[in-house]
Amino acid sequence: MEKEMSCCGTVCTDCEYYPADCQGCGEIKGKVFWLEYTGESCCDIYECCINQRKYEHCGQCEELPCSRYDREDPTKTKEENEADHAMQMKNLKEYKG
Image 1 (spheres, rainbow, N blue to C red):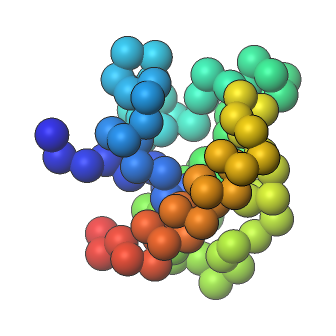
Image 2: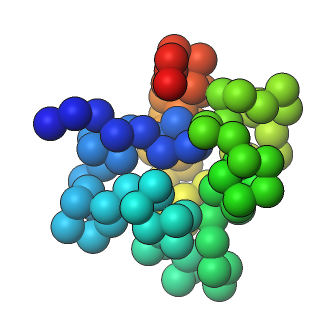
């Protein structure tokens, strides 16, 4: 399977929720399942990157990493979130798309 990366640096195809519960942000337009815990209608990283700035991914932004990355996925532990954030930054720095 070809890897699919979200604008935030998460590799969607590596996620336990892909593709049964989530088809990736490109497909679902940032309306991730965990928004039910935050009360928002769209992931704020997706909103900023794709909808407002019209970037392909956050690696194109001079403000990376911004405060939007300080938020944590409410479905994960602190340690899981820290590991995810480190991997996101690594992925965005390496991404050539």
